[in-house]
Length: 350
Image 1 (tube, rainbow, N blue to C red):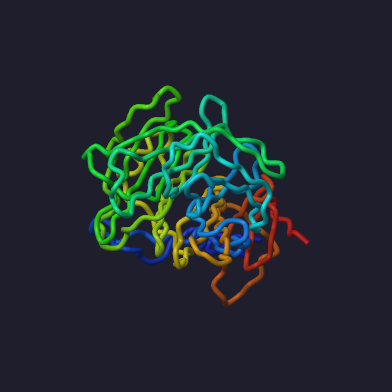
Image 2 (cartoon, rainbow, N blue to C red):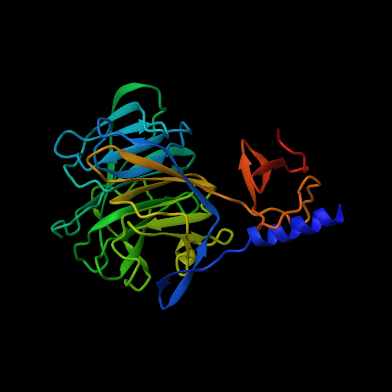
């Protein structure tokens, strides 16, 4: 028993260790976070939505993903709800659109107990929309099937420097009830901004608050998407090559969280035009790429640390480096040792 316990303790120590160094960020190499696994869970089908640039997991009907594409122009604006494997479930046509094209991101969140969808009409490749950036919002409908039409409200905003900015990252924080927006700068420093959500803004132009630069621009630039986990614990922001992860301490402002150095998710692999990212819960997020053809949907699951004093009698002696991790599935904790799964009590799962 003691021998098995010592083996497991060593294995857990290895499993809880993060290896290597990531990209340079403000003069230091980020820690590589090895807590996530990556699998292809589905396909973003071109006949459902082309050039997907925004993902958001449903809060009203958990288990579905809202997405939109770059094809949303003119009067033909819509979002769709899909299953994680990519199949179409429902279409939502958008009415009362103020006429702003170049949708670049979508988010879901809760405000005063009501679930909302937020759409960012925030892209500006040609830097021509100074002070004409929009966040559409409406109460999230229950996902059933077929097609519905919704009237959107919108918030118009500009930047504190009164200049045009190209942006593809819109996030909503359920703790602060605040939008966080990161601009997209090529070969330069990208910046994070914030704007509290308020139902009474009216038609005037709101001014974002500058939060912090994101890195030094040498590696982590040209930002393409981001999302905040529904519990507010994690903020993930990505470009095509990397996903960086910030962890919130307690109930601190996310603006405070963003001032600290993030970690780099080691499992992420570069996507050709990777723009969409969405948290399902505190352990799982999805990504896909902005492509004209069918494109993979990837699922990332965070492997949680196990307790050091967990003993499993069936762990066998081995000369190989042990692999130990903990997962949560359907609300229960399971421990995986060298590919063999056990419950939290140490009983092997048949």
